Structure formats: C-alpha cells, structure tokens
Image: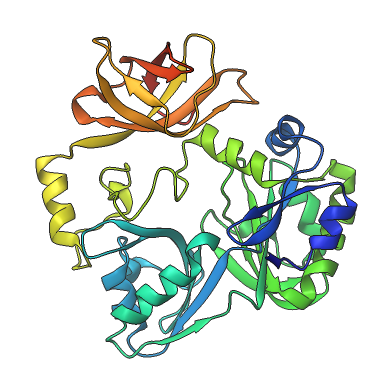
Length: 358
C-alpha cells in the first residue's frame, strides 16, 4: 500500500485513513458534513497526491494527444488547461483527465489514481508519433485548496497576483518559498479555488505554510468523502461510477468536450451516436420521498419497469435532501420526469433534474 508524503500529517490531524486506488488516503477528519460545509462557506485543503501526472513532450506530442483525446488540443494557448477524455477504439472512456499546455511541445496529463497504469500503457500503445513520454506520478504531489476564501488564504504565499489566473488557466511561479510551482485555477468541488503541483520533497512545507496562512480564514483539512459529496452536488462525473471503458462521452453528457473538427480514436462511433442518438443517458435526480440512493440501485418508471441504475448517490450536506446520478434509457431521461429508486425493496419516488443540484 502506498502512502503520500503527508501520511503522518493526516494521522496526527485525526484522519480516518482508507485504501483508495492503492494509496492510504484520508477519507475524513472531523466528519463529512462539517468538512463539506467548510469548503462551501470558507476554505478547505485536500491532499490528492495519489493522482497521476504524465509529461508528453517533443515532436509528435500534439499529434498523439489529438488522436487519443476527445477535446481539441490545438486550440489551447500556453498556460491553459482543458478537461478531456482519453478514448479507446470503441469511443469508450479510458479515463477523464485534465491536460495542461506549457508550450507547443510540452504538455502534462493529470489522470485518476486508479487508472495510472492503464492510461500509461494505452498512451504507449498509441504513440506512433514519436512523442516523448515521462510518467512522473511518483515524483509529484498535488494539493487542492477549495472554497470562496481560497484566494485570500494563500495569496500571501506567492508574489503572483492569483486574481489574474482565469478559470482553467495556470502559472509556474514562486509559492511558499519554492520556485517552479504550478498553480492552477481548477478543482473538483464547484466552490472555486486553486490546485498546487509540487515535488514530493516540497509538499510538507507547502502544506504547513498553507495551513498557517489559511488559519485566519478557518481553513480545514478535507477528506475524500467530502470531495465526493461536493462533486456530486455539482453533477461532476467520477470515473468508475459515471464513466468507464464501456461508456462514451456522448452517453455521459460530455459531448461538449468531444470535438469532431479533428480525427480521433473512436470518432466514427461517437459521431454516429451524436447524429442518431444514444440508448442510455446520464441523468441527475433528487428524491421526493425519504431514502438515500446508492450505487447500483435500480431505477424504475411509473409502470414498474426497470429503466436504469444509480451510479452515485448521497444525502446532500448543503441541501439536506437525497440526490444522485444514474443512467436510464434515453426515452425516460426527460427533465421533471418522475422515477423510482429501489431502496431496500421499496420504490422511493424521485424526480429527474438537471445538475448542479440546488
């Protein structure tokens, strides 16, 4: 079992540690609800150093990425990031990721921890373009500082004016006494914030400096459980739940990052899906009756016919109601349609709504 550099810090802060993608990670500290609301109203810091980082550089880099990814990499300027899907031959999602462009010949892919080996092997197999590839996942760490008070919490740690970094843009600058730190205006919470990429050797000091600087703004360490409830309230997809090798971006509602202005792996199948429609669609729903939806619970229509299944569900800490995501057949996917979630052999009434949940 792997540990991030901050393992001892998490334990000393009272974190409950669990196995996540082969890493011992903090699932919660004081409790999911309190941590969730801290990020919503103040600021929280996540250690997500289990995520993977690949550097793609040199001749052929753009060509490799354009073929393997759903989005159009050619439109990126230096210092811009892009949400993307890595696609297999059938148009299924190998992984969802963020791509960073440093220059015309240098990019970084940030991939899900559970998919590091799979993604790496896939890219290697498709690299007929002569691009250089380096897996630096074990050398770099990632902190995510999220919430409305993020900027004022960490501004004193860098001479760079953080307010000038637009959403999905990044800079490489001095931070917390170290040079060449990547500061990115990205996140997985919907609450705003920044993500910090650094070397493992720099992580503990950077974490301590952020905790100290943010103390006047009530910064708290946040576990993976609250990260999940925050992303779910926004309707953000999670790989292994809403996304998989057998689900396409069109089915997952990610047509907006699937660009047919270029040729890419699986594009013929996806173009056909876009033109002719898909058999199933990802929906958001909120429960009308009491209950909490969980992954793999069956979804029924008014005629007691199974139309799909839940992919993610929770009791929303912000809203005080049960919410979820799931796939249903396309004919049943209209907004405001009444559906039923089977919970402990009872059919619990729910309604399809468009995320984010409010």
